[in-house]
Amino acid sequence: MENTFMPSFKNTDELRAHQLKGLKWTVEHAYKNSDFYRSRLDESGVKTEDIQTLEYIKRLPLTNADHLREGYPFPLLCVPESSVVRIHASSGTTGKKKILAYTQKDIDEWIHIFARCYEMAGLTQKDRVQIAVGYGIWTAGAGFQMGCEKFGAMAIPVGPGNVDMQCQFLVDLQSTVMCCTASMGLLMAEEINRRNLKDKIALKKMIFGSERSSSSMRNRIKELVGLEDMFDITGMTELYGPGTGLDCSKHEGIHYWADNYILEILDPETLEPVSDGEIGEMVVTTLCKEAAPLVRYRTRDLTRLISHSCSCGNILPMHDRILGRSDDMIIYRAVNVYPGQIDETLSDINGVGSEYQVILDRGDDGRDYMTLKVEAVQDVDTSAKDRIAKKVSDEIKNKIMVSCRTEILDYGQLPRSERKSKRIYDNRR
Image (cartoon, rainbow, N blue to C red; front, side, top):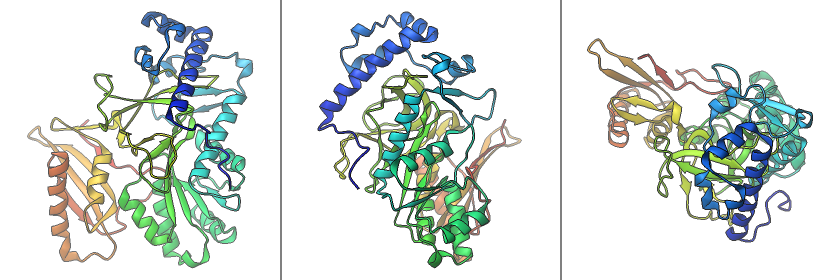
């Protein structure tokens, strides 16, 4: 299949020129059509005609989730309500949902870049894509399905959960690709193994969204099912939905669609750009979004930019896998700890499985204590558990600079989830 959905830029200079044009359009569009943006831009002294380089973006005001909630039910709206053809909402757990509006052009653009994800994952129109993510007001199901149909593969919209049906369709329809959370991927892999279905299905690839997948989890899924490859897809409701980036088969980083948005990595406290390769918060500015454009929107997602080009030859830039969220950060004995750091540390230790829980308690002495419950790999020698526990505690101390008590559990003892797995249990509040 030809590269139908990839941009045709010959080099990064052409890409940057495209971004500058899009940045000017977005700022002018937002200024003309949104009281909120007009007020913010006037306060910062920004004029569209002053934007002559991409570096000017640093002078634009930042926006955040609170601004979306304050503008409920149609925040940041820059088109007449009659031009809105659909709304989606975020899956936030507190307060009112963050509702985002879409014009037909926004929907068409989203479908196009989502189809690009399937293309980058190496799918063909002969693939059968079993979509096991949430439908309804959320962006996941609609995005995965519309992108699949645009790409030209067969969409099988099963939705989340319902393991019996998932297994039945894997066997009866011979699905070749499954789209789900990483937690659902592990649950399905273990169920396929338990039911002895590996030789009865045609599953070759999985695409994970909505949560971070650790290396150990991916390795376990691949081992149980015999997959050819797995991919991480990125996105959020504010930025269309899922489908705004994907790692290619080289797995050197997440290619993000820089023809649709500008990505900055800022220190979440100082809000200044971090140095090359340092971890910071993703801040995005859309380049062609009509209904609800984003100007320097703070996503709260943490990652780092990857400065080198991918060996696959694609010129689209990359960022690292999502380390966590700045508002999910644990402050433990004055040390900032991110769940992704624990993932990475555990993935490098022999004998450790993919599932874990972090329990934080406050003792009678007023001090904080961390207990790390970690599953061992399947069929681990019981006599090795003490050694593995010590190794885990030592590596956490060496790499993250905090002390913890480690409990090694048998494989399968921790709960599995059809959606996102809960990892952090903070009992101090």
